[in-house]
Each structure stands twice: as C-alpha cells, then as structure tokens.
Length: 201
Image 1 (cartoon, one colour):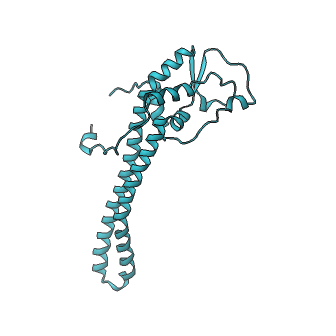
Image 2 (cartoon, rainbow, N blue to C red):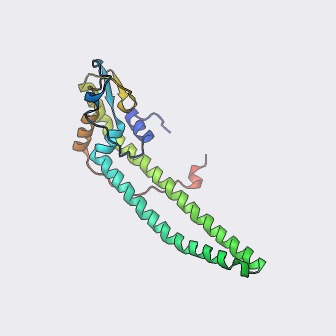
Image 3 (cartoon, rainbow, N blue to C red):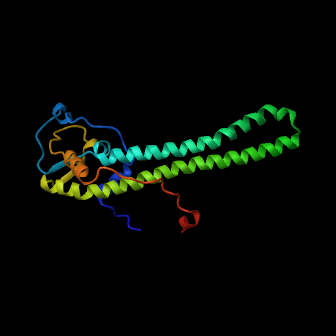
C-alpha cells in the first residue's frame, strides 16, 4: 500500500474533523507581534479551508445528515430493547432463578449486539469522514501547488500552528477561492466497514 500521499491530502486526513472553526481575516493586522514578512515563507490554514470552502461545508452538512439518519434508526431499535430491560428489572424479583437467568442472559446478548451496532456506526462515520477529506485534499493539492508557485514560496507552514508574526503571505484565501471555482458540493454515503476476512493479513 502506498503511504506517501501528497502532503496536503495527508494533512486533511489528519485534521479530518470537518472543523467548523473559522479564523478571522483580521488576525494578521491585529497580531501584536507583527514584524516584516519573511520572503519565501508562506502559510496555510487547513481548518479555515475546511470551514469556509463550499465543498467543506457541503461535506460537513452531508455527513451530519447521514449520521443523524443512522442514529435515528438505531434509536428506533434501542427503545423497545430498553423498555424490555426495564420491564425485566421490575419483575425480576417475582421470577424463578431459572427464569431470571434465562431472560437476563437473553437481554444481555441483545444489548451487546445493539452496542456493537452503535460502535460500528461510529467507525463508519470516521471512515467516511477520512475518505471525504482525502477527496477534498486531492482537489486542493494542485490549487495549493499553484498558489505556492505564484507567491514564490520556498516554505509552507501551518498557519494554525504559528504563535505570531507577519502572516501576510497567506495562501488560505487563494486555496478556498480555487476550491470554490473547482467544486462546490460533494455527495457520498456512509462507508461500509471492511469485512473481517478482508482485514486479516
């Protein structure tokens, strides 16, 4: 398996929380540290790209929609089970030891199976998020490369990790605008979990 992804794609996957945080455009002007721009040193905010690019917003909305639908289905399955557990707890004292054991074990097995479904949904959401961010990263890669060249950059830093200084040579706006021109929406469904057989070495 090729583990050498383009740097921007890999960074998107690492920060694949579909962040809704935004960074104020006035940050550079208000930065008390200020200073002169460093020739060749450029910056990019991945989080701002996620939050402000149209495709990132569309991806966040779609993933939220899919997660809500799936959780609603699980809730519909879980409520009857919860009611049965409560009913069993209320009448347990009136049951024989054999009845309590049999019914208790049956409910425990069903509860464990339901919890496994909940855990699988969480894994599917994370897997889907990573795949979507990889797709967005692939779209952003050539745009970032073009902005890097046009700004005559020799080094690109993560703006969100910079404590202060002159951030005027910022590629974030160019990348967001380029992405908006290239793609504005994205459609996808929840990814299935890899089969256990396929995941074995």
